[in-house]
Image 1 (spheres, rainbow, N blue to C red):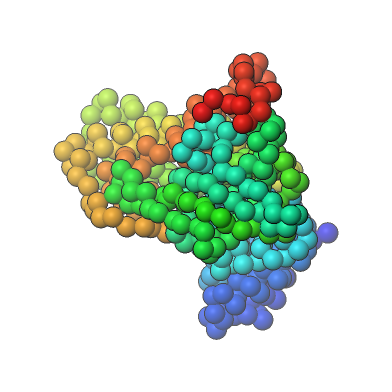
Image 2 (cartoon, rainbow, N blue to C red):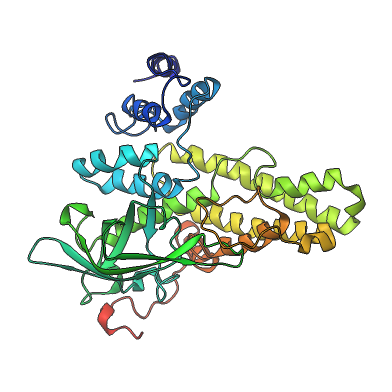
Length: 394
């Protein structure tokens, strides 16, 4: 019902009413959300206009040309890429109205409380418990790990075990957790890069009102699949220009420093350059498919390729630079707000890319997803499929 010309008209009306040079950043972002120009494919009243996702590019181009501020999507990627689609699909009307606007404007940062020390690849084996008190609040106790942005977050998407008497996939419920609750303790996890980009989160008597439950009790695994599918697309299917991402710095070094070149390195760089371009174009195709609906298991294949390419390209870059590649710019302990692969040196890229095959689902698990859900191959035998969670060996 809204064509390109109409979207341009609405965008120009927004700019006329709220000139970017004269309007505070948060005020402009709020006005953009209220005008339905935040994510145009969302419903009216929730930041969108109910039009195809592909038309978002029209709005973005107009606003960028006018120098309008964006919502710093890298800083709030978990909220935008994982929490928002899940809230949109499973949230109540009240939940959507409460959470989506400040999520999109970046006023409230989100994190993801899924993985646990004993439930990473086998996420459905999680042990964090949520017990309901007399039909009212839920009380949550447990530990989560590898939680990006927990030290910045106002809210978290959380899955917890609400019924240990049934098989593991059927006893999970999905919640929105208030990270300011006094029972939430966030501790930094220092990683091989020197930074504490991740955290471990301890939950002790954390109270969650039932109004902050997403989906039905016991249906949390199905709800979580929406989050996980969107997460893999967000990680592996990000929009990049040609030579964007990890292939850019190594290609630049190759062109600017011919003294480092060898025939073998040339052949390897050509191969990886082509693979990076294929992955970029495959990502564009995947995003076009998303216009027609929610992401499916194909995102697992994109995330697999992203991890492998990053690790191979960063390894080639270190080797190309020789002794210089072994240097490291800064191993200071800090807690960054975002990951910047291209803004640091080759040593950082090499070390940080090691986590790409773990975060967002390990490569081994994603290979199973591609095999079973994309290629239709027989599923692996699962002896715990019909066993109550409380009876599983741990």
